[in-house]
Amino acid sequence: VRLALVLLGSAPPSPPRRRRSSHAAKRPLISATDHRMRSLANFLLMVGVCVPPALYVAVLHRRCPAETPTSGESGLALARQWLAALPADASSMFAPPSSVACDVYASHPRLCVNLIYFVVVDVGFYLIYLLQGSTWLIDPHWQLIPVCISLFFFSHPDAGWDEGVPQHPRAYLVLGLLLVWATRLMHNYLRREGYQFGDREDWRYNDMRREHGRWFVISQFFAVCVAQHCMLVGLTMPLQPAMAASGASLNRFDALAASLCLTGICVGLVADNQLFAYMQSPDKPLLLDSGLWRFSRHPNHFGEQLWWIGILSSAVAAAGGWSGFVAGGPHCWAVAFGVCFNHPIDTLATL
Image 1 (spheres, rainbow, N blue to C red):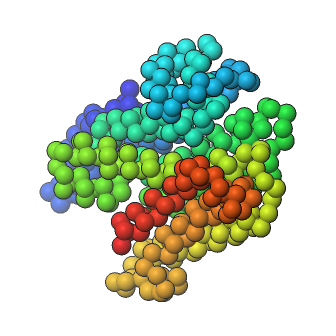
Image 2: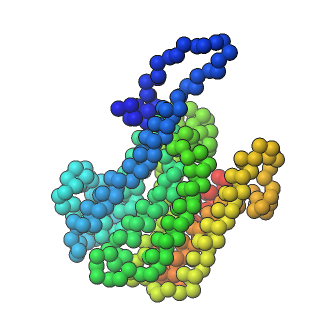
Image 3: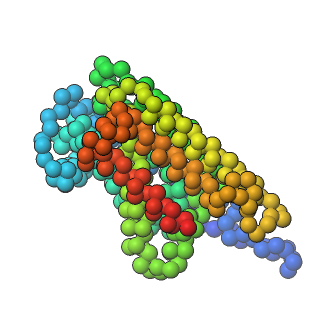
């Protein structure tokens, strides 16, 4: 019970102690024990929110029939039916899922990812933001959510999982690169936060909270939840064709994709290490202008953008090249949407 109260920021204070002298140091508002408990509770929350969608997808994977009939309805109609059937599907995890849930999972994997993200992150995280008064939770999930989505596509029937079709070597290549990227970025996040969970939120959202005042209760749903939905899910859409068993054989675009991804990881690693060393320096100059920061004010963002362009290039490789990728028409733009949306927005927000 105390752990839950600490998580919600309402733990009962420790009994007051007698002041020994007027010169004694003031007692901190939160004791070291409460601080550790709050960090532990937030860590469990960070990991725990991944469990329900993982269980839901596991049920779909195991219980949906191999040959799921396609209804042929529009994506909007399927989304409405999926949301209507979700309470019954979620309450009976050991019963066969509804036909619409199996249809969306098997025949519309990108729609399935978006719907699960909407329920868990857009709505679920929003409620947590309101309870905790902080949007910190989305920061570590910038590393965790792409990993979860990649595992969704990696284990999907389209990737040959449990279908008797060997998985494409590209699927293992992309998954391996993504795990390296996520590990590197998570280490940088934890190091920056002093290996504490939930201590602070992104300074931009903190500023927005002050500027919007009482309206931030509403505006954060769109500024934090919906906007990040377009970025996070959009950026990971190339993972679906990249991991499909029907993709083209490994080709020169795979080499290009791997080179861009590894270069982006290395640039981000060096830039973040240089920034961390600068921030730890007791007599640091006003401006960091050495190393990679000598050439760019945001080399870490440059490395991150190189990474996602590399992931998009893996989808181009799966189509056999630019001509095959562009020939996909709407499918092409659905896959490329994340990079086209996120990179300009990220650049404008950063600058």
